[in-house]
Length: 452
Ligand SMILES: *[C@@H]1O[C@H](CO)[C@@H](O)[C@H](O)[C@H]1NC(C)=O
Ligand SMILES: *[C@@H]1O[C@H](CO)[C@@H](O)[C@H](O)[C@H]1NC(C)=O
Ligand SMILES: *[C@@H]1O[C@H](CO)[C@@H](O)[C@H](O)[C@H]1NC(C)=O
Image 1 (cartoon, helix red, strand yellow):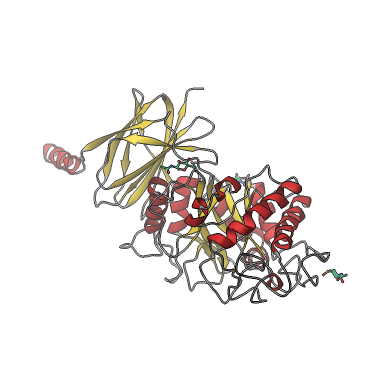
Image 2 (tube, helix red, strand yellow; image 1 turned 90 degrees about the vertical axis):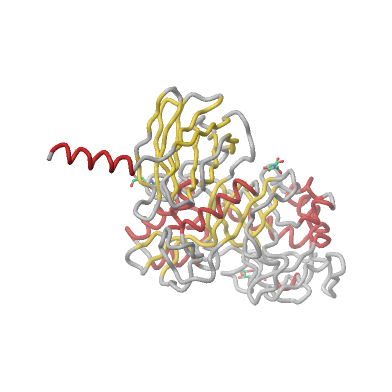
């Protein structure tokens, strides 16, 4: 009986034996620098997060987004610079009468909850606060409305009887940054355009390369005159702008995934950010993997992987973070009914990078390949090395990872799949190499530290 049992055990373990692949991480190679991963709570979602959740659930929501032990460890927030006609949606709701008249700016201290949200994120160490305008105030545009597109008055081909509002718009953006700065919230990135090729029924402004090229130098000079040029001023632009020689004025190039996922490189020396992506189609789902649906975590892990590995992205920002009683879409990462919170597989997809790959890290190259498995590797500013595996195949992959120009002294591995969310798992470290098992349709992240 004993030998029969032993036989069964042996055949079971043979059944569990997988081929082992080898991979080398070239730790001294440097590809793009990583700024981070993030979300927005624009259009009042920050105020709802604060007001519809209190006490423990509110803290839990913040932990899901920003905590590096229990959440995704996100490091970027994207705020909206309001362009509306009320003092809760703009720092300049009414036209001063003309572009050179004194503007009566005012700040309601709330910005529909974004002041609170920024302060909360900062408590978790978030340092990258990206303020983005969807539109200029309506009175500065050809259509005299913050909604439905229209162009900034004074840009080429768009003159208005009210005058040239380009400098006034630059002043408006700079004043927004100052209001935050005076309240101890440093805005590190500024965007003056959101989706310049879309006309929407909500705040939107059109711009081609020529329009943007005629505004960027004015914004640049206004920022400089206000002592704000030391930081990264981010503006959305198009390929046309790069050829128009605007690169010298710009810190970043941003894009949204709605017209197509970032899967290939935009040719520029600037950092590239994917600043808004989301599943706007499916109902809310928390699933990790269920066949490849748009709301699933694994699907988003593939998008983030492609962005980092194939499109040279330095940042990946989902649309929204926490929403309360909004189950109709998967456009946000954590759902709540006001009392409990449900993290999605998409949140954990972000966590597999964001918790471990911290701002300032560089992506590094790898040699070797693992069947059906995407690999991204990084070196953090503290010297630690992180390797992230994404296995889209039907069987587990065992990988032995060696390192060039780095000697690991300790390894910690975490997996996410249909039964686990960033769960600690075993990894074997021997002779300067670490061996890990990447689950089928799952992810494994291994973080290695050198001897101190
Ligand atoms: C300036 O704006 C504030 C706040 O919106 C308002 O109370 C005040 O009347 C305005 N002043 C002028 C001169 O328009
Ligand atoms: C993150 O979560 C851990 C574990 O619950 C907790 O000890 C820590 O205080 C949290 N961090 C912040 C900044 O709240
Ligand atoms: C990737 O982006 C960096 C800027 O972050 C740039 O310097 C580099 O040239 C880009 N690489 C490729 C292959 O385009």
